[in-house]
Length: 83
Image (cartoon, rainbow, N blue to C red; front, side, top):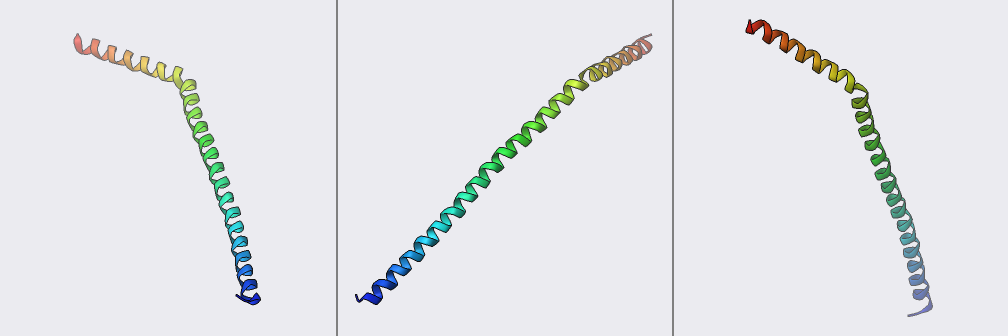
């Protein structure tokens, strides 16, 4: 190998190292993006579930009143049909 070929090989190796470093940086950014996506998606679902449970908790008295009114109507209907 002469000096020219050695320089060409070293230049190509340096280019490959630079490309590998760039790829590693891009891959690391992708991993960070995915981690944040998982975190935000988890928070998103926690908020939705908490809102649904909170709505149920707040509406539970109204739901119980409606259930009792329906039962009262059933009782009245049964007493009318029964007599």
